[in-house]
Amino acid sequence: MSPDYSIQVRFYPPPEDLRGYFTTFYVTEIDPGSNPKLHDSLHPEWGGMRFFTSPGRGPDAWTDHGQRLEDIQFVTQGPSSHPIHFAIPKTRMWGFGLLPLGWARFVGLPAADFANQICDGFKHAECEPFRPLAKAMLAGSGDEPAELATLIEFFRKFPSRGKIDEKRIVAIHQAIVDPQLTTVQELVERVAASQRTIERLSHKHFGFSPKLLLRRQRFMRSLAQFMVDPSLKWIGAMDGHYHDQAQFVRDFHEFMGMTPREYSGQPHPVLERFVQERIKVAGAGVQTLDLPSGVGGKTA
Image (tube, rainbow, N blue to C red; front, side):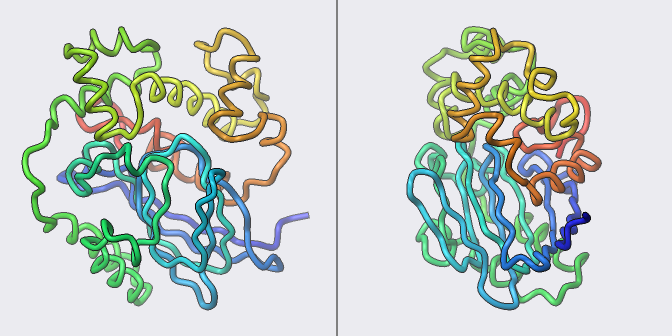
């Protein structure tokens, strides 16, 4: 039987002058059909913002460590290494992800302080600079090109936060997305900076230690492969750098809070649609596999 809910999503790559800062801009229209809400969970990803226009009560979002937001219109999240769960009613949503360089450029606060955090953008003090954008997006008439232009123009005009170590941020990002690089020592050699410097920049702009970032990449390569082609089963989707299946299961439980079997036994109506559509535009099914600006191939 075909599901009676509807999910429409469209992804837009950022323009060339903003490409190093964002993953994608996207708009989605969700109608849960006979369900009051659709339930799903975000994978570990970079930070980002989302703006929800709902005819009634807005979505709810929560984390495994006890944070909960209800009836939200504007949510900001830091980079994550755990799932963010949500229940979403009939809603139209605009959103975008911030690459580490984008976090440094537009947020400017230590990413580690916001890691695995979700914030109501209309209440959290640090979100104040982005409230004019949220109000503009929520007041949109449904003219998609005009709304996309509003997003782009806002960030083109966003005031400078001062000098950032762009070269090293991009170098670290390039290294961690390389599937052949698996250890912190290899990362240090690739970036040609001290381990202490890389640790500091990783926590400040990426949200986590280099070791955890590399583990998250390995896990997300596996999860994304399964989401794109479930016929592979977990053993076929598992990244080649895992020593054995037990190590993969431990990582799965750490990053998603459940076993692979539990995950595949649950419906993922929103994320499955996002992954399938995203890969057509961005070249990667999930944010964390996006290539930073300056790397060959598509940049989301």
